[in-house]
Amino acid sequence: MKISTAVPFVLLSGLAPGFARVTPRGIELEGLLARDNAAIGLTENEVRDGACKESMFLYFRGSTQTSNMGEQPGPQLASYLRWTLTPEKIAIQGIEYPAKLSDNICLSVDLCHPKELAGASDLVRVYMNKCPGSTVVMAGYSQGGGMLSRVIGEQLESQYKDRIVAAVTFGNIVQADDHDRIPNFVEDKAALFCNSGDPVCENGFLPGAMRSAHQDYKPSAKPAAQFMVTKIASARGWPSAPVVPDTDLTKYANTGLKFLDIFRGAAALVSTPFNDADLMMATNKTRLISIFGRGDKRVDMVGVKWEGGDPNPPSHGGDGGDYNDIWLGENEFWTTLEVCNGQKNGNDRIGYFRATTSTGQSLELGSKTTDVCTTFAAAEGMSFVGMYGESGDEVDSLGPIEYAKPL
Image (cartoon, rainbow, N blue to C red; front, top):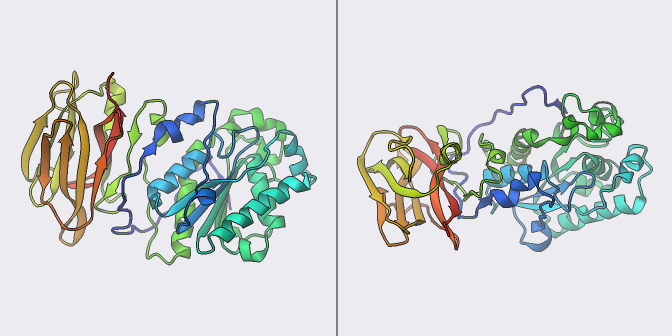
């Protein structure tokens, strides 16, 4: 399936109630997203070095990109997959190969160095053999897209190929030669993203790789993730597919903010997303002075205030329950957050919220439950300065945002 990114790509799927409750593990923007503009790339070796998980994501970076994930769009796609499926359910792995500029030519005319193509194919087999129960999704950018097409189309045996439920390419250098498909692969398992005006994937003009249309596929990471998540859900027999959140993580690159994993009471996108990072970026305020909210049987509303900021900042949620707040003194920081699941009319929500500061002061909202709970702790030298999640009349999901304490 060829996808021109000049046209919105939408995949509609049902929600998976109670799917994405997680234990804390941060989505660190400086580690995952700020690298878009950095000289180094991200390295991912979770399949090679870690335990097997329900699914694995194998990625081929583009020409000259730093091993083994490159700068874009691999790290962004990996972030969306982790956020949607949770880090416990998907392992990310970059595929090592030279990614030299000269190999673009040999790939396009099928004269690629056999040892490089064979080596990449062998790595795919090794990782799939290590975790025979894992559902496999793959992607590649530019030359990496060409490598993916050749590995799947020419190298892998059916026992491996049949386990791949989704294969995605971005700006694929052999897309035109292959007539907008991955050879010898089930067509509806493939999504080929090609930016409007990208001559590399539109007509195989490889010098066009220098054009801007070929050099930024970050906006395609979210629809690519949704395609993969939908295929994973179908392959594993889930009743419905989780929806990839609509938050654009890339705009927070180079801010120093760290988003810890979101705790979902309700499933994703049943209400309105919120993110305190937007206001922090707009006002350049990060010194937290107050945490407030409303709650009774559940958590109805949450919010924070920053030093020098709006005395009446936006809150997240409704006006039910009882109001409460705490005020932080000088050199006092928000250091831990406990949240628990709750229910309203049989539907999951955030039932309990407890924020604790470095001096032991705490704010409790809602009612403590014996259901699923998670405690987030700020890392050494860091503190919580805001929240992100989703809310309507009540708070449906939330996660804390970390920032470095002032020196």
